Image (tube, rainbow, N blue to C red; front, side):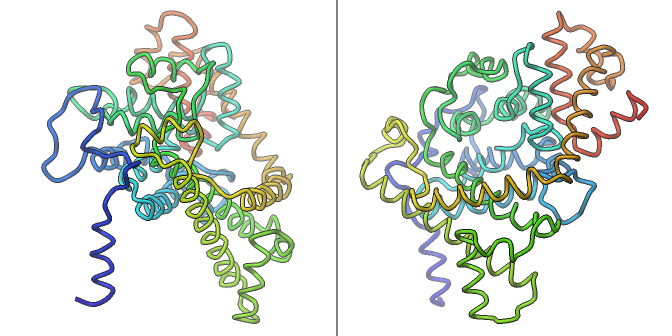
Amino acid sequence: MSDKGAEREAMNRIPLAPYATDWRESRGRLHDEPGSAHRTPFQRDRDRIIHCSAFRRLKHKTQVFVEHEGDHYRTRLTHSLEVAQIARTVARTLGADEDLAEAVALAHDLGHTPFGHTGEDALAGAMETYGGFDHNAQALRIVMELEHRYAGFDGLNLTWESLEGIAKHNGPALPPHPAALAEAEARWSLELSTHSGIEAQIAALSDDVAYNVHDLDDGLRARLFSLDDLVALPLVGPALAEVDSLWPGLDEPRRSGEAFRRVFGAMVEDMLGETRSRLTAAKPESASALRAIGASVVAFSPGMEAEVSEVRGFLFARMYRHPAVLAMREQAAAVVSDLFEGFMATPDRLPAEWRGVALCAEGDAALARIVSDYIAGMTDRFALQEHMRIRGS
């Protein structure tokens, strides 16, 4: 066996750390099912997420740009795949369950509306008096109720650990809870006031790594700023300087690619170093002990957090608040608001599979939830088509 082959075999045999979530100790599923002869429960969760319709729709849901404006910008699907790749690497390195980390990473954006956070803000505003809207709560609603693939139950019947990770990968979910989250908690308590297991924490910070780097890349592709604008930024500036010293005169795509991969690597290495330090200090001997620490153990160091914050500030000023992006956001918000108002006023205009339950809804709150579910599931393109259909504009 070659050295590389031996290394791969050794990596595949890395045992779980004491603080990892052990699939053999899973709290199970809401609906009992026979186990698999070939996959762990968390591997089955991952596979169910990948095969569900909500995951496929992420292909046409955008991060920042409206989908039809360009083919090279990230979508929710490509973003989720990038997050999952980071999460698997970090989880394996730290001795956590990489399949659970991957499952949470792949599911973390399932509840997002069309048009990114703009669409979510508009739908949350429309739902304010009807129980609220939150994309994490909506992701739970999708995997617990809205997917209809299996004869014995609604949803995907994921394990408790995957549901917990979806609900609180960003930390404890404190009240007041949106109605969808409260309903999920009533069905099966996810211990919302505590921190999640390490795998969900890994997925959450992997999300931060992915979107900060790819938003820089997408903003550059959209010509909202140039590489020269990034020279003064922490993380990016030193990476560009290193690339320029190694390959003077490199063309822009390769120059940016080499720089961004270094930024990416620096953030992951810092995450690993800080997390190891926190684990060493806390010494959790079980997944339950890690949850009981009362703070996230997966984190950037203070120095890296400050540098990442400066990068976020640049992106906010030069990308998220760019006039071209703001104009698209204004249009997108109007589309979502119009769709909600239109379907609330005339629910008979909903598609057949939604119309029956909508017309039988008892009260405005129940109807609003059905309308919200329908709109939240739309892709950018389909939302625009539906807007034209019901508004004629």
